[in-house]
Length: 207
Image (tube, rainbow, N blue to C red; front, side, top):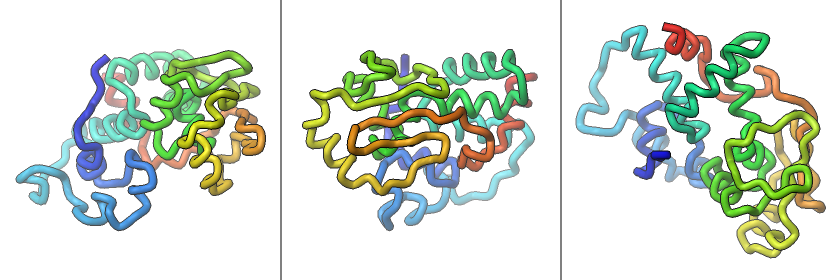
């Protein structure tokens, strides 16, 4: 599967907001949005008329870049959300929040979603006691995620645990002493802090 490998700060600038793709750097003055809050490229500072389609496209791209997923994955999640009961846009965001890599990030066991994907792919986590190395696995309420015993001595993992600020989303509980966390309940729209108008994404894919 093709994945964007270029400078991720350009993505934040293109969307005009912080996507928190660089971990700790996003909270410093070195953040690209703080230094150059306009789109990249020679026409980045020019004023452009945004069409209805353009607005829908930007919202979709924003969500894709937040979660680091491909277009084919985005379509798959939309179809799943559309078939589920409830509001399609909220279902879509809920599915993305319940991805294993995002849950690891939300637990504070990675400084960014990209780092969480890498840690999961390298097999550092157990889900309900079993090794899982697929970042796109969708979790459910009651699932437990734990750092493998052998991985707890990793300098990277130890650093993340030691510098954990204790702040996690309310739908996840974390036990730092046991290197684990669990999903208390599936997130609602109010629990998802991404500034996106998901109804525009639904309109885009429903055409």
